[in-house]
Length: 227
Length: 220
Image (tube, rainbow over all chains, first blue to last red; front, side, top):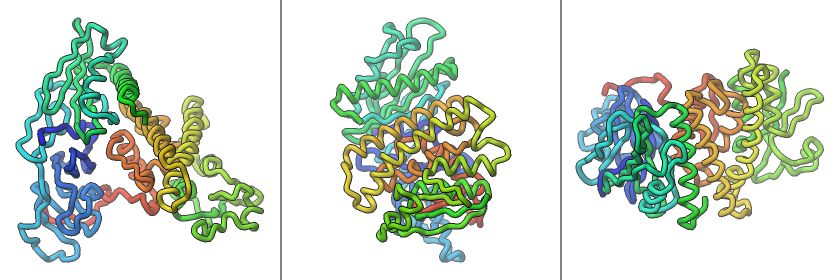
């Protein structure tokens, strides 16, 4: 398993928890009240409940089942049924390496996290799931450039391959550039995390969001799936 | 006007009415109907009240409403003095509200039917319903993504309308039908904003936003 994008930073606001899947790895990704992001195995060490069903209390994630609280280091520090008890240090959530860079949350479930270097001033567009393998999604977004924002002169360049990141750079100044980081969920599901260069206006971002939906439709159609 | 709601606790359409009534602090009486397993909504006495044999039914004096969207409008028009939930003073917003109310009844036909199939083994073409449900979730996600880019927190603008309540129920309940919200960040944010509204009401499958409550804070 390599470093993978799991969300745009914008879409995980403070005190929120979400579920993310990377192949067989099921994880809970959450942001504390002060903004710290963590990604853990989606399993409470107590009874195996999915931690993505839990809720954030300040700098802790609480399991929905019995309310065990885990701090940002993954350590259980509070058990509501035994409020006086100092939980043993061995009770820990299984934490993965994460990094937040270029407006994207990156996770590596098995090793060090290495975010892909995307020009840091980016505007979030959207994360969109496509029902096809990652190579088909990559191919779809490379070929079907945006009619007005991105022309046929747009240069599509794969700037990274683990994970795949595609840069769409239009020729000419003041044009909007687009970056797409691909999350390999499984062999039939890919999520495209899309950002734009910071000269993108609100209307540009809306147009790019619609374009992404069109590219998805075309890509799924040519991959023989239609959702 | 107060009213009686002929209700089934697990019905998304009944929940819409309970939710809006709670948000607007309207008191009412509940008449629980044994939808499952009793099929009391198909009994002769119930059919005399509502020939469609569907739930919910709202009764108030001589008024009998059998469509949940109509009930939301009826409640909001009487009890929301600010006219934000049923925005009669804003043509654009009102038209959008009617449009999304229409969409909400499509959600009942897709996610609602798939949920009945999944939970109660109601016979259905599950694969077709699943595809329809995903199409509807994608349509909603596309719209909410754009709304959010434009700084609009809800379906028809900056304020929630009855259309948000109408679309909320079966969207929030889609995990009951096997469709999680994991891949729909726009929907997730919107569901959360509705769960955070003052006076929000839960039902089985739709929980309160625990993270917004200030309870004990354990030393961390």
